[in-house]
Amino acid sequence: MNHISSYIIRNYLSWLPDKTYLRLLFLIETGKILHLANPRTFQEKIQWLKLFNKHNEYTQMVDKVSAKKYVSNIIGEEYIIPTIGVWENFNDIQFKKLPNQFVLKTAHGGGSCSVIVCRDKKAFDYNHAKCILEKSLKSDIYRSYREWPYKNVPRRILVEELLITENNKDLTDYKFFCFSGEPLFCQVIRDRHSHETIDFYDMEWNHQEFVGLNPSVKNGMTPVPKPQNLEKMIHICRQLSKNTTFIRVDLYNLKGKIYFGELTFFPASGLGTFSPSTWNLKLGNMINLSDLKTKKR
Image (cartoon, rainbow, N blue to C red; front, side, top):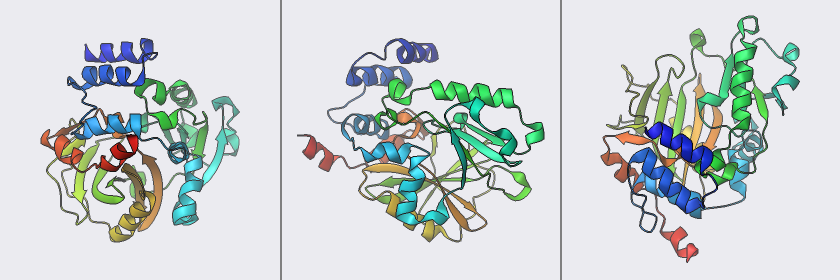
């Protein structure tokens, strides 16, 4: 029932004012009242940031095409995954000129559902890829979830080089949760397209008790090895999260070489949950809104 109600809100009630819309969506998705006057939990504070923390550069930071230039200007070109090409329409992509392996993604898309990995052009399902990407091109994260930085991101398809791992497995995602410019936790996602697992670590690489933002995904059976260049990854996160209240910095670490993934201001749009649920409040306490609230007045 919640799924149906959420669909109705996102597709037929998007004309509502932002505050009203988010209160209604929050209630349907979480079953809770959204407290904007005094937000306390991680979920509530992410909604508050959607409404009251707006900076023009955020649009460039979330655009998967323009973010590469933004990030390279801060940490250097060597951390950027090479771009093969950018197209506005799927039918314009010159597949014959692409290498045998590559990655397609929409510049404004959120999550792995807007990413297609080609490991062998001979076995590539073009019709499936077209269906997924054209659907993603029509999606509107701003309209559906009020994630305003995406409002003016041009609709484009980005084709990147595929980073090759041992045994051709999925890349391990290192997603650093940064609070006031300081990374405090790393969400590690392994085997995303097969037997996905999620583990959280602190910056000393101690395994944490909680899982999120999708508690249905469990911890891995084996610990995630501590990256040998973890301190370098942390340094990069500090550079990219500077002057932000909260941001998630996504990195890859392939054979000791670090690559930038993306920047995310609203993980799971602030609607995902944690298990144990007490971590919703614990992480919320780490988001400091005091300076922003002062400016808001």
